[in-house]
Image (cartoon, rainbow, N blue to C red; front, side, top):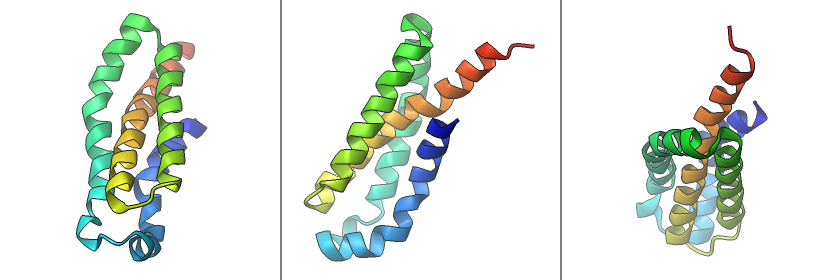
Length: 113
């Protein structure tokens, strides 16, 4: 459940730091893309990860998505400009696309009615 919380909070937590990030990295005209890239890639990858989880197993796909999310988060912290930050946020969103639905599915598998 902590993984779901991380992926969900990461959607908007960046908003708090965004004024400082834009001041440091520049590129105010790209401001909204930091949010859009995350949400778009997350939305697009959810059905893909669902199918992959059915084919290869939920645990394997969940950990692959969590690893992708972790790599994206680390790279966001190391971003040297707004364009790399947007790309790394997209990578983060791709990982989050696996975390939220598969974690919920795993809980449903464990506690079936």
